[in-house]
Length: 375
Ligand code: GLY
Image (tube, rainbow, N blue to C red; front, side):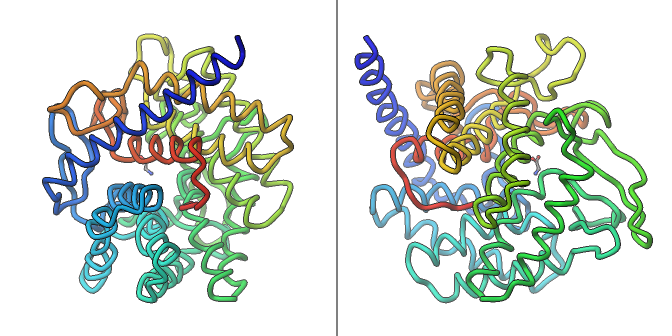
């Protein structure tokens, strides 16, 4: 019985991968110029390449190139970091999320092809990210506009760019900045029960913690599920790069919170602590990020403990693939239905989100033996 279930599962992984590849190939054929972002019905809308989501479509292409060695994916992905860099020469919207943008493009391109310009762009982006560090509060500031005191949980995912730059550039400064921000998040943003806040606001001069904000979550003391997934995955990465057990314990604490809060579902509500979660929109992007993060964590722990995380990741992937995938809806570009972009702002509710699709593909690739890492 056991082996039958296992074989069935393996067959499904290939089927889901091939179905996702068909979707990617169809989208590739229309050669999107702008960065695909959200799809309600049909095509993804597009944002300029200085938006935080601009790395996910080319990152998808690079993963398919790495897994298949089909040159069409490499050719289509090649220009994206070049085009992104051009935007840095004018007034643009780049901010703390350059990790999300340059890791799946310039840095992955360099890792897969040895392209020296990819390496240079990745290091330049790391410099930019490190330059946003506030020494007084020990945090990397979020976004632009008039918010110099804001630190957000998502930024933990950008730290891999700094850790990579430290190793690649043989310069520990970047690692010091990443460690400081991770420690700040441990102290102020990841709670004892593994839940997380979205925004912490600091006094930019004294570094004193002033307040929390719910922002993309329901309330300051609630737990935005995508933010919880970012923390899980980001802390696992920080441990992989540093061997600091505090980061591992934090990743595990968040993982346990995420898994327990699913309450048997494969996909969480957009916030774990929203009143009446059963009637609220779910967020498949949070589920996909958590699945890939859990697989990362599984590989970093003992086989016994790792099996718990891997099983949880497989359950999420199963739910995404069988309950939320748009494989049969050919006119729809997105892979996963049921993403929630920003519920409090009432934008992009129950849509496909390019980052949901990206992390779903990342998780499938990991389950099928993919060895390279983007984050
Ligand atoms: N990093 C932005 C978001 O998760 O919506």
